[in-house]
Image (tube, rainbow, N blue to C red):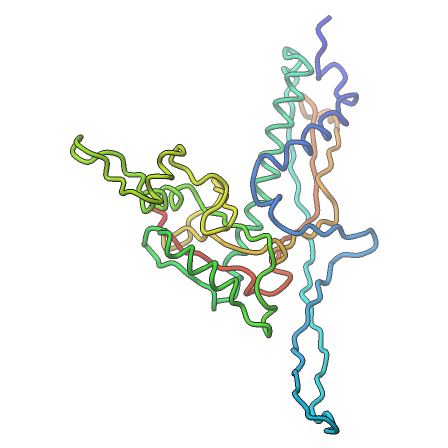
Length: 294
């Protein structure tokens, strides 16, 4: 008899869970680029503290009293998880497929859905970075100068706002702004089939290394993200940020349970998680980058 998932799906539950969780980090970039916080049982939120005052450095002469006192004050951001659920009906006809094939396909399918939901939550937080660091222009292609400005803003952030954004810094862009950025860097091919448009220097070097920046641009690790959606102005909101700027608070990671019901021809898989994203630290440790989505 064929080895089928439908024959005894309960035995495959742990394999599905393990395979799905294993694939999550590879299905979207954002989950790997932020600070994850696990919320213990008995708590329904996490509080991320930060200071909101700066001490004054005095220059007294010998014998003078210190006349200025600095108050150490703290504030915090609270992130409360939200329950997420996926319900899947595995048709009874799945018995025609092997157990191993189904575990591979279903785990990949679930991992993509779970990763996209986490990714959507995290990229939606780009608009919550401090407005003082907003760069880029609506309906305007992304260019290198915009990224250079974003990095400078993060590095020059004032002490009152958390100081320079701590390393590592990451840049996450959607595919269309990435294509526009490569065009700006010189990836335009031939002109009139005569000679390359590519000028000598940085652009030529980039083209010679397969037309894609290797791992960094303006000194920042860059990643593309195909899940970033257009906003109401046909723009794509990308982001440059410190890993400590964005937080993913997880009360319960994705779990999977199996059910059989008399009114369903097949088996029900229910996957549940409890998490939420937020800008937990200083909002000026991130920069919102507006780029044309057309």
